[in-house]
Amino acid sequence: MSSKKKNIFNVGFLVLLLALTFWLVFRDQDLEPIIKILCKVPIHFILIGLVLVICYVCGESVIIKYLLHAVKIKAPLINCIRYSFVGFFFSCITPSATGGQPAQIFYMQRQKINIPTASIILMLVTIEYKFVLVVIGLALALFGQPLIQTFTTEAQFYLYLGLGLNVFCVVFMSFLVFLPNTARYLITKGFLLLQHLHLVKDKNNRMKRLQESMSKYKKASVFLKANKLVIFNTTLITFVQRILLFAITYVVYRSFGLNEESLLTLVLLQAAISISVDMLPLPGGMGISERLFLQIFSPLFGSTALTLSGMLLSRGISYYMLVILSGMITIITHLTVKPASSNSDT
Image 1 (tube, rainbow, N blue to C red):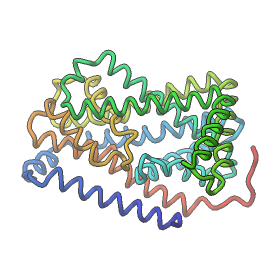
Image 2: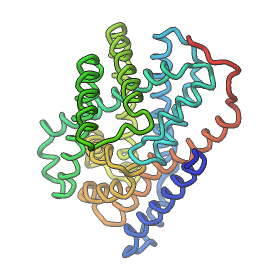
Image 3: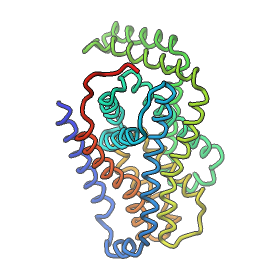
Image 4: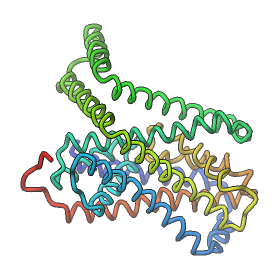
């Protein structure tokens, strides 16, 4: 399947999933009180939410620029903002956010950032993103049990499943980065064993691509050891970036005139949802995110109509508006960022 057809398929699947999600959520609901509640929301709360989501995306842009600067590549911040929006758009429309980084690398290469360097930079961004999510999740699991015990059994299951998958992912990536030679040896031997047992076949040069992937992690290891302060600073930025996104739900909560719960509580609850759905093979965790929101936030919002309105507004700002905005910027980027005449190795 061509890249264009694949993107059309992904967008079509996203729209279908969106329609199915809304039908399942609202099929037995009276929409009139929900519409009335949403119409009464002060516009400045929505604007604050949009500012937070834009700051969230631009936070990654700052990280990309910071990491590029560490390897002596000068990239205007506006270009890094473009890379971030492109990445978020393709992450939003592809299962498990698999399409984001390839799209970012494509446009970074167009602006004379070579593929190996772009790959390492974006790999580090991913590792930091996962690491921060795991830290928040572990803190919630260790110190937030009173909060977790208020969850339904289903919500607790998804939380621990998501946390376990993210922990495994971070440990595995750390193993590849900090012990690259050992990882290369074990993974290569493991692939050869599976091949010998006829469980996998070396189609499309899988072994070669596997070894090339291992080389990227080795280069990432070198970068980490040479730029420890840079990694520390960008990890802090990632932490702030995640909090900004989670805080959108608190803004929505306050927009309904509710003030019983603290910012910390709302941030942790929204973090729990993000951890739960992060590794699931659904674009933006669509469907399950809405379901968990209704289960987890229902006691805080009170009535069913308020909870549904909160879910619509929170997801509308943090995900659906992000898809639309990043889609528009991706189109502009595609039309304005032309292929470079030659690729630079700097």
